Length: 557
Image (cartoon, rainbow, N blue to C red; front, side, top):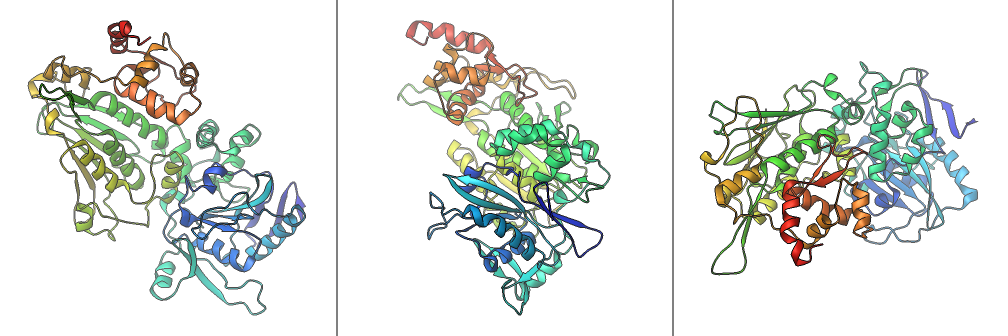
């Protein structure tokens, strides 16, 4: 029966009422990004020029089985593609008078999947053409099977999985492996039955949707926490007793450590190396994305620095970071992505004069060979936390394609640093990434301030470099950063600074102007502990004012 834009029916299991929403749904990610595969891997998207249940139902079954733990996938009906699997614009689209019929048939055919499985359906318009987008997250009760041809009179049920960009039948060893995954729903996609739906923070969910550019963000004021959680697939369960999922509590609760002890990042500074008696410590907690960003921002501000050494015999200076930020970011995000949230051990970042070490628990999956791991060739397509990876990718914090270790290797090589080390033990109890300091920027111990036990030194790494090398090691301000400094008279928002520079592209402004200015210590946040706050402002630092004063006569203003 039709009820308020939803198609409902009683499932074969009398304890469950299955509902497939067919209107007023919005995708939790930007449709344009989805079509151009900016936030979702190509193997997780299937384009169909028209409605063909014999092809679509097996693919839904494959996404539900989520054999590689990638988070399911999307089927876009009414969108054709070329031979390389890229969407063709404008799309073919669907006739308006056929959409209701397609929805009814889809609901009927989804009941043939065993156990019953129903995707989330969204009606979208691209370049004036109507599309149906099916979001098919990994199922809670896999394995699933479906008829090979749903319209055939004599149906044969089969297990389907995704292999790259194709839907194939699971046979032989693959079928046995799929069957072994029964009831093994990844931890981050499970319901937290000891929590309440109200433990999900609507403002945090709204901020996320706005950041990723989802059209769903505009509808959040009228949606309840439960409705929004179900739309984002971070909540579920029966209507009379909804539960949040673990991934929802990790990203959209202000204190996830109350549900998952050990959800924190400890940044530990050893002024006398790890064997010394003194160390400084700062602990970061909170929603997963914010915690990660704040820890990275803190490390970047206090412990990363580019050294510029000028040479008398040539114009080009030698530039080197003690630890390249790209490598540090990948190492920390990798730990957040792949650690176990069932263990109570925090992620630890240990920084000393000669190395930066990231430790997380447990180690990599046993399918990853030790030799490949040490060589940076480790590839594991079955992720421990498929939903966490999905959210981190939408936030552009990870690629989710086993590229973390290769990117660390490339970043260290590009900086001229020694090769990183990747370590684990035979029991895979922990995973350690060691980033050696660049030999040109090692600072004598005497130049570091004496730290008191468990108190982080207040002197910045920039001050330490100046003490070690003298004034010849100075921040090299780019013309773009100089232009930004010249227009920052008082505290200003990101948008105000961008407007003052006449820039329309937000990402270009962030990468070329804002981030470099922050990295150089020329500007600072008014709320450094809340980098994504709506009330965040930026202002000149003492170094920024000094640079402006020193360059005011050469046209910087």
